[in-house]
Image 1 (cartoon, helix red, strand yellow):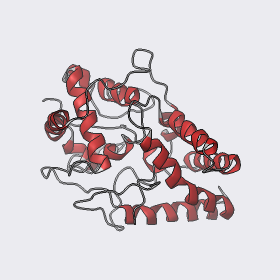
Image 2 (cartoon, helix red, strand yellow):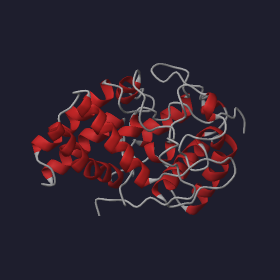
Image 3 (cartoon, helix red, strand yellow):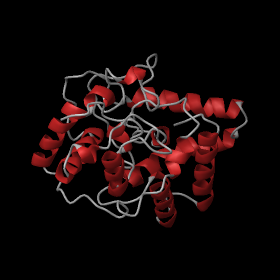
Image 4 (cartoon, helix red, strand yellow):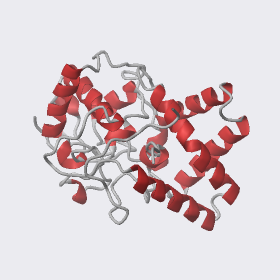
Length: 272
């Protein structure tokens, strides 16, 4: 399958806990190396509730709001960012950016699958989270404030790298271990989540069908608009839905159903 990452499953752990080192068409194909299996759920997928909605709605501080990456995402920047990622980030986030590095097991909240969450978030949000770390509400993670270690260019370079990693532009470097995104396994996780939501009467079967049929369009729109984008996940999702309605790819009713189901799934703790 060519299903892109199911963005709503990634929102909750958006950069929620990160690098552990304190020093130093409407579909998008995902390139994989080692992959997570259905019997080994990777971090950043289903099962987390609690503070997910708060993270989802987190407002970007004024000093960061509206920032866009001044560093061209060229080969040189991505190479520099890759070196920084391997040194500082892969131990928690894993080689493939799926939140399953060797240090991840003991962390709560779990490290985010940043390679793919980075596809859905604005530059300002990413730079804020990398810079300030996780020792604050609503994130409460072990990620340090990387502004104390990395200069501004370094932080923008590593953002370029994780975005290139998530889009398949670069292959994961083999060092710390960890899975790359597996679209087939994620397709099954999505179906399981929606089935559970119907069983719990969080959503109806009809709503599950609409949500499953439209999430690829919404994901794709967000990824196409990624360059120079600003805002948190809520903002970008709302923008993508509005654009799809204007383009005639979704009806307003479908967009409203998608947004409503998304919120109910999150509040019920069925996705992260």
